[in-house]
Amino acid sequence: MTASDPNCIFCKIVAGQIPSKKVHEDDQMLAFHDINPWAPVHVLVIPKQHIATLSDVGPEHDALLGAMLGLAPRLMKQLGVSNGFRTLINTGRDGHQEVYHLHMHVMGGPRPWARG
Ligand code: 5GP
Ligand code: ZN
Image (cartoon, rainbow, N blue to C red; front, side, top):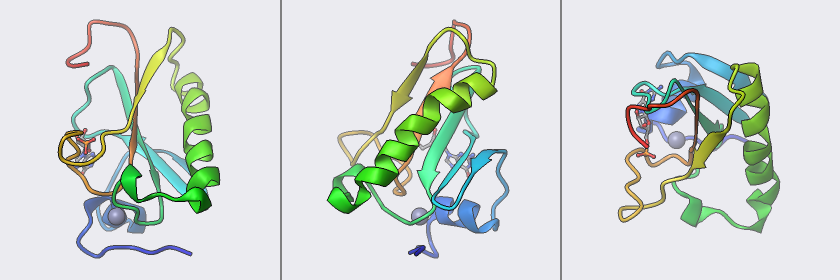
């Protein structure tokens, strides 16, 4: 099922070619700690399949997107975040997206945060 882009850094993380601190993996998603965290807990939830941006999804991705969002509260609980968290998907140039493989930021932990 997995379409991957050989030049994509997150596809390389999915393939294990670049190391990451994984916090969740199943057949369709991977979650790992952001290398440059804004918050005490900052993870990225990505599809294993290469989808460049949220603008590229269609109705066939509804279940995947639901699974990504539904994973967020379970991950935060697992990582000890008990007082709320932020979810964020940057999309495209004006959305300040830097890595063009769909990802959802999930950030939590006690404030102050480095950013956000
Ligand atoms: P964007 O601005 O595209 O929404 O965010 C991309 C995020 O990916 C940034 O928060 C950045 O720190 C993170 N990131 C970029 N390269 C790597 C990497 O190689 N490993 C990990 N764990 N995070 C990365
Ligand atoms: Zn990719």
